[in-house]
Length: 135
Ligand code: IDP
Ligand code: MG
Image (tube, rainbow, N blue to C red; front, side, top):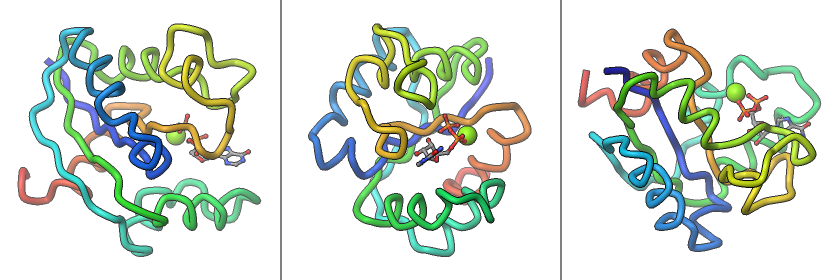
């Protein structure tokens, strides 16, 4: 069993796609073991996206991710980190395959509906950051 951090971004909440995204996660037979809705503070967003600090899209990304409520989740299952990344689809719209969340539901590079941890180390850090009460 593996745990990963998944977030429906503000565009997903605004577009009323929370149910659609949760449905796809559950349909794959992953378990949602924690879930909450919150509007991320600037500080939380900076910590979450620290790896992208200095990139040209960083400020726009922080503005976007703090623009409204998100749904934060801990998702559990065998190989959850890699399989959830596959379920999400690639970052670039032109690479996001049909059948994936991004490939089916968005054409924007920034407003791409969903975040998922990209490695075991990041998953551990992100779960502690977003769900300190679990740890
Ligand atoms: P990921 O979410 O697929 O792991 P990352 O490269 O880690 O993608 O980028 C984090 C987030 O930053 C993306 O999901 C997207 O919202 C945003 N982003 C990445 N690259 C760009 C870009 O070139 N322009 C605008 N936003 C971007
Ligand atoms: Mg990433």
